[in-house]
Image (tube, rainbow, N blue to C red; front, side, top):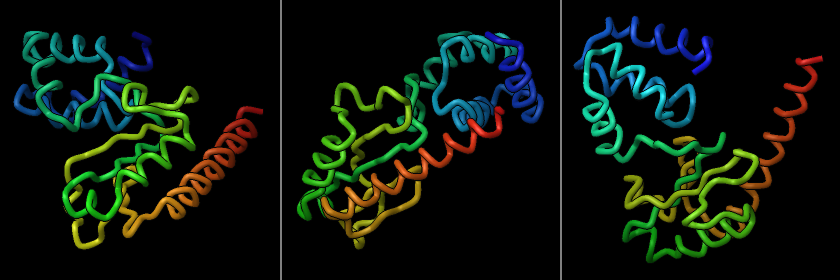
Length: 169
């Protein structure tokens, strides 16, 4: 693990006073920074919190919101709960996966820009069918709206990449 990563983890741990009971909050902050929980970081926080690696890994795998796999910059969650499913959420899922070239088995694009997931319920049944992008709700989706949403996200990603390249020069 790089020194920069250790500094980030130490800051997160310090902000939680190295409290074992704050392990979930610590993991949430790590995932916010890295978009997943890298294995070496779980080992590091286990050591620093004086917990077994098995205990920390158990917490990370118990909660569905934690991911041990890298995710894209944009995490798209398509609801497949009853209200969304009967309003054709599967067509939206298939449209988005088709555009991005991802599958259920390989949900993240090669460039790490997009991750597409299905969820059982997003709690917005009255707005069905819905999807979220980084937890922002997009209601009353259709395959056409999904295409437009992906196009906008791709444009934002291209703009962000251009700005990052300019900053490096």
